[in-house]
Amino acid sequence: MTLAIWLDGSLREADSARVSVLDHGLTVGDGVFETVKAVDGQAFALTRHLHRLAGSARGLGLPEPDLDEVRRACAAVLEAGPVPLGRLRITYTGGVSPLGSDRGTAGPTLVVALVETERRPDTTAVITVPWTRNERGALAGLKTTSYGENVVALARARERGASEALFANTLGRLCEGTGSNVFVVLDGELHTPPLASGCLAGITRQLVLDWVGAKETDLPFDVLERAEEIFLTSTTRDVQALHRLDERPLPGAPGPVTARAMRIFAERAADDLDP
Ligand code: PLP
Image (cartoon, rainbow, N blue to C red; front, side, top):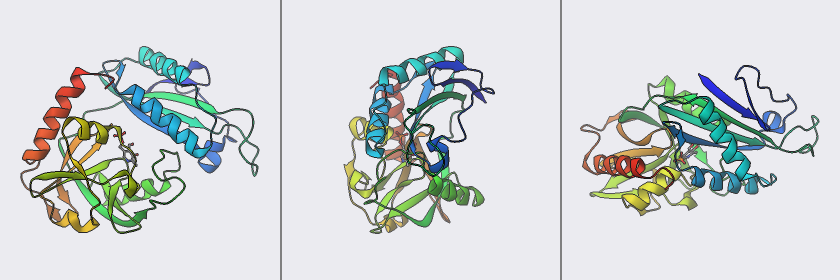
C-alpha cells in the first residue's frame, strides 16, 4: 500500500496525487529513479542514492535535480507514514511535454512515494534469460524509468516460480538481474561482474565490496553453472542467496561465503544508516 506521496513541492493524499498524461516520463520513459530502503522511519544510504539519482539524470540529460529538495521530500513522506520497513520510490522525469515534441520546458517532475514492505526470505529461486544487457548502450549503468526489458524478464521469472532473472551482456559475460547485482563463489572466492559489464552500480553491491570484500571479475555467463554459491544484492533484497538457478538446485543455501556476507552486511547496515 502506498502510504504517502510527495509531488512537485508538497505532500499529497496517495489517491489524489496526479501526474500529467503528457509527462515525458510516462510517454517515452524519459525519467530516472531510485528505490531507497526505509527502516523505522529512516532512509538507508540516502546520500549514495541521491548521488546516483543525480548521475542518472546527468546521463539522460535531465536538469540537475535539487538534492536538498529530494531529501526534504523523503523526510516528509517518512514522517507522514512511519513504518518498520518500507521503500521510498523517488521518480524524477523530463516533465510535461506536448505529444510528439522533445522534452518540454515546464521543468522536471519529482515524485517521492513510500510503500510498506516485508523482509525478503534469505533464499530465492532465479532464472537466466536469453536477452542481453547492452553494456555499450546510451543507458548502460543509468537507473532510468525505461525498465520494459526488466518487466518482461521478471514476468518470465514469475511464470517459472522464480523471483529474479539474470542477464548476460552482448559479449556473453555475466551482468546482473532485473533489479539486482549478482555475486558468485568460485573455488571459495567471491566475485562480482565489473561495472564495465553494463550492470548498475548497485549501492548494496558497493557496500558488499567495501565491507565483505570480493573481486570484480569479468566472467562468462556459464560460470553460473559451476558456481559453488550465488547471491543477489539489492536495496530490497539486501544479500539474498539462490537455492535454485533454472533447473539447478543449490542445496545448503546460503552457503558459508554467502552466510558471512549476509551477517556482515546486516551488522554494518544496522550500525550506520548513511554509510
Ligand atoms: N541492477 C539493477 C538493474 C537495479 O535496478 C538495481 C536496483 O534497483 C540493482 C542492480 C541493485 O542496486 P541497489 O543495490 O542500489 O538497489
